[in-house]
Image (cartoon, rainbow over all chains, first blue to last red):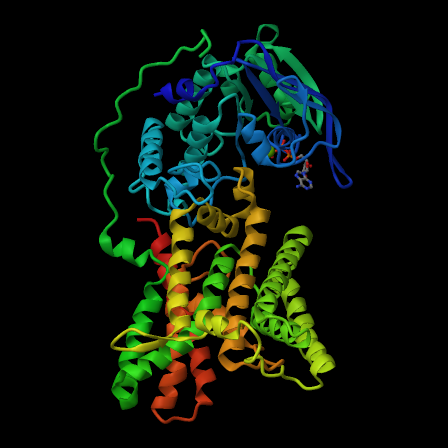
Length: 271
Length: 353
Ligand SMILES: Nc1ncnc2c1ncn2[C@@H]1O[C@H](COP(=O)(O)OP(=O)(O)OP(=O)(O)O)[C@@H](O)[C@H]1O
Ligand SMILES: [Mg+2]
């Protein structure tokens, strides 16, 4: 079920080598300071989990790596070289694939066109080379079946799928095209138990194939199942940064919920 | 592959999972944007065939096709632009700008007319580029940007023509060098044996074929649909949305220039006030042909059917001996019907089954 990842993984990946490094990275949206002074290292063959409340800056953080926004402070290094991506294309070309929380698919386009959007297969390299529609249909169909997604017809507009199915297409696409780094922004939020399980297996498979994975979630249980490294953001700042060996699930859950705040909450809600 | 790879063997996908069935033929046919226009075209053809005897002749068909082609050539580009999520209200007057600049430049400087033809192409493409660049740079809706260009060009067309020639039309260009070659390419009559059509009809069909191929079979077409359907998502997966949109505006400009050259070589002289209002006819043809105002959906063949409906009605009313003033009312009615039919079809196609 996870052979796709191993097939497409960059063969030059060596476990433990830093793929993405952020040092003191910050981002302002005009007057809003969404992120400041964040350090994050994504190593090959490891899963870095980013946790935090709504509005903590998690999506902002990964949008910097995926080239959707430029950072306004600090340094971003990819494969040891300082980069500032001008567009998502540059990030994709560096082998970084992202599943966005809010930017998924183009509703009126067919499922297979969505799957290959931006990375179409063509029958040649010359400028007017036609699309290889047959190959794209077959691959998209096979990849979705591997994820356990049953679509009636690969040619139907993707808007006719359920929200979770659409999310699965986006994930299958990133898994298929991500050769070095895979970024998942709350991939399991809209998914059922079975599909969540599949996504977690994919995450583990990507790690095992040597990819660096950034996994964003609200769910510390999911995070602890696959994570090697945990970062908690709060109001754009890093409040926890620990290796798996340094933290237990209870600590993580407590810290996520704000520890003290959770105790107060349970006191308030006591019946 | 690194040594740490542990790939589990693939589990064979279930051969035919339950609930997986090809969509029915009817739902696939109704999923095409141009069905509504096709039905409408057949009905309107039948209608004029019944009520207007002169409409039944082949020369009448040639006239209808010619009228359709003068709209359809630009409408292909406008349809693609609308699928890409943008409008161009300057398309009507830009046609005139191209024809005027080619005619006046060659005539005033006594040059071979092909110099004017080439320079006017550069001018047209520059106008398209500016439209597109302003839209993607400022984020202002293309409706407003091209509305501005529309007024600017309309004023410049009249102002500059009057300044140079003292009238609102260009002098007759038919005695300039190279005119005959231009006429052969842009404005000749082509005998097809049973019927003689204007060459614009063949160009129109060629542009529709190219537009359809681009839209359905090329990567660029994929990017056009995605840019109009959901620009942010398209950009996030690496589609160069800005370049696509600028390219679409330049495509409209190119086709407008082409029609402008037809006007120049067909009539030898160009009226500076021409073209106003045609921008809406192009949009109507595209919308009747199934293009959504919101972008992301439509077809080049649909725009051709829309243009054909325009041509049939435009000429059919004359053949039937009615007051041509009714034409606009009919056009409005057509648009309203088309929009409603398309909405219904789109909901049907996009509905979950
Ligand atoms: N495009 C934008 N323009 C202005 N402000 C923004 C923009 N995107 C995010 N923000 C602000 O940045 C802050 C962090 O947002 P972000 O989306 O990164 O949070 P998040 O941690 O992903 O939250 P969630 O768990 O809800 O997804 C928020 O205060 C938000 O209002
Ligand atoms: Mg988020």
